[in-house]
Structures are given as structure tokens and as C-alpha cells.
Image 1 (cartoon, rainbow, N blue to C red):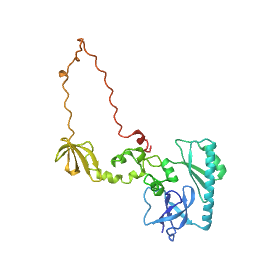
Image 2 (tube, rainbow, N blue to C red):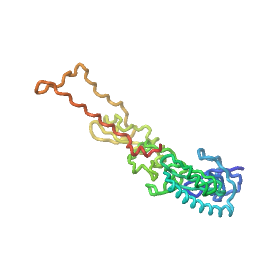
Image 3 (cartoon, helix red, strand yellow):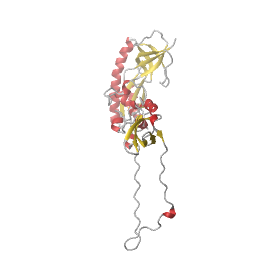
Image 4 (cartoon, rainbow, N blue to C red):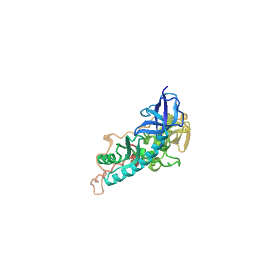
Length: 316
């Protein structure tokens, strides 16, 4: 009977799901499997009772248990990866390429070498590939990754003091937007909302669904409401307590629950006087002549809803 197992590899939160035809495989065993970089080696971290979770990438196969020969070969490949990393960085500097090497993976069978790098734009690395193929004598693939993947590979501690989530357990990255920070009433401060990768923190997505559910039904800030103490305007929200602060028109401020207020339409501005009632001539000056019209003042610039430097933290 074919089972689905989760294989974890050495490195930052990297795993994949594989089918295992050998029913005697146990948790913690080291096995040889198919990977993106050829034949790799990892440990069985979980045995699933059903199919693999959706959107977890391709399902590959477990080839065999790791033998002593595989283990010794893996140690030799670790040394070869370090040597290939140093050679690749030397050639990047020699060819003045605007790219940064992040990680190198070489399969146990040496059939493929995978180089991960970051760059601000497109890079012509054709000559670099020729240098690597000539040096390694194997098939070479260069794959450009984003700054989030780079942070996951390099690893660091986050602002909370714990290892970065991408390094510890995240396999993929969910989209993060400024709207999530605004829904949680967080201060739009780039220094506090950005992670070590320079993008919005992934942890903003963890509780967003809860905040969105609790926020549903709360009057928005600025809404006009009627309360038992008179009319007023919503000044702030406490989403977790599901309460709002209302500034009363008679003065003062009260904290009420959402079911204690009633949203009322925004009052319309007073009507403008008709054209016939407006004076056609301007006020007279001391010399009997009309004063020149005052120059029109420039319209005040609309305040940006989100700072530009914070908007740049979102993934394009």
C-alpha cells in the first residue's frame, strides 16, 4: 500500500511530500528521495493517513532507505557544495554581475547543481553558467528568488526575539498587504511592520481572519451614530472588545458596545445661496474702485492613506 510521508531536509523549514511504497518505513528514518536538485536525502517527519495537503507542490517518490554509502556520499557533497559556492561567488565578482548568491544544492548522484540567487532585476548569467558547468562537470541551473526566500535561507531573529517564522516553519509565503495592518489598528510605521527581509511581516496574516470577523458589524471611525446619551461620532474602535469610542455632540466621550449605538446618515452640508443672491461686484475700495480679486489659494494636498515608504514594502 502506497503511503504519503513528509520529508524534511537540512536547512530552513524545507520539506516536501513523497509517496512511499515501502510500508515498513518509520518516523525519523533517513531516506533518499527525488528533489528539485536531483536525488536528495532527508528524514521522515510525518506519515499521513490521507492524501497530501493541497498546494504543497509536486508529490515525488521515496527511492530507498539511506545506506552507509549514501551517508558518506552526503558528507562529500556538503564539502562540494561549499566549494561550488566559493567558486560561484568568485566568478560573480570577476564578471561584475549584479546578483547575490544565496544557496547551492547538489544532488547525491551529482546529476544536477542548483544555485539560488537574488537580484534587483534581470541578470544575463549565461557566461556564468558556462563557467560553472566547466568547473563542476554537471548540469547547472540558476534560479532567482525573492528577498523573502533569502531571509528564509539565511535566517535571523525577528522583532519578537524568536527565530523568523520563514526560517522556523513556513514553507510558502502568503500575500501580505497594508490592509491587514490597518484592520488590526496597528500604527503604520515601516520600522515596526517590516521584517528582516524588508517586506511586511508574515505574522500579520496569522490573526487577520480573526480581526476581520470581529470587526464585522462595528461602525467605522468617523461614522455618525445615535446613542442613549445623544448624537455623536465614532472616534476609535477596540476590535477585540468589540467596543467603540463615541465623541458626543454635547461634549465628552463614552465607550459603548456595538449594539448600543445606531448608525445614522451623515448630515448634509447647508445649501449654498442661489446665484441671484450673491453680490456681482466686489467690495469697494477707499478710492471708489473695486478691489482686485484675491489670488486663489492652492488646494491642500490630500493626506495619503498609507505612507509611500510603507506602501513600497508590499510585494509587487
